[in-house]
Image (cartoon, rainbow, N blue to C red):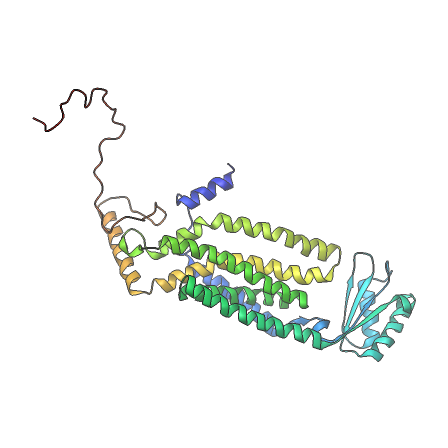
Length: 371
């Protein structure tokens, strides 16, 4: 078995582990810092809305156009009087986007670009895009997002409890805010592909969170009937037991998305791949982070405020302090399961271990009472 497999097995058994819940204030602070940075970027720079949302024209030049991206961008801005976005595609052609122009202006710009690029105007394909189509997609996306969040909260509140539903909701908002903020800071164009990517990462983030919640729910049954672990201890063990699985699934999901982002979009120049892959890449990473460092520690914080679990925590800490004073080994939350152990149970009486069995034991003894 590989070292990673051994580590995963030891984490699952509780032999090793990292105290994520104890250090939750660090993760909260880091998330708040990243979220504030994303909000500032979104406020100051804003989103670079694509032509599908603002309307305009898209010009596609013939293959192997000799002009560079900067030259074509300069030509388009001089011809239109508007900002232009130019992308060089894999076949050597150029994709020039100019927002906020009508049909007459598009024809004039097309002829001017043909002269500047020294190509026939018939070889330049011009497409007009109206803003209404992008607005319809955006409205449908917002409606779908709202319905999705409502259904998620209702389902988690029924299947688990309202505290887990609230923690999952906070994690989802955390992931969306960071992804949108990164888009604003990087300056990538927001297209319908971006919206598709955002909706996709919500499902992944929620899936990873629910896996940890399910483990936490199973391990906290009858938790108040024992005095060895607090709720935070068990929550931390749930994170550690699913940690390797979460890391593996995240890496496997990020590898093909990274290929789309850096090879498909960066090398081959496929614009739509950039739009989808960046939102997926950032969202998947943020979703994995929030499921481990935000959602479960937040559930532990909310649960520890309950009177029963507050009392349990006091009993556990008192028992540990008593054990430490008596010089006994302190029992932590990463030890064996407490299921079936009654509170303050007395240790079972067992005989000496490895005692050899006598071959003559029990032979020749008459049945009935001993004399």
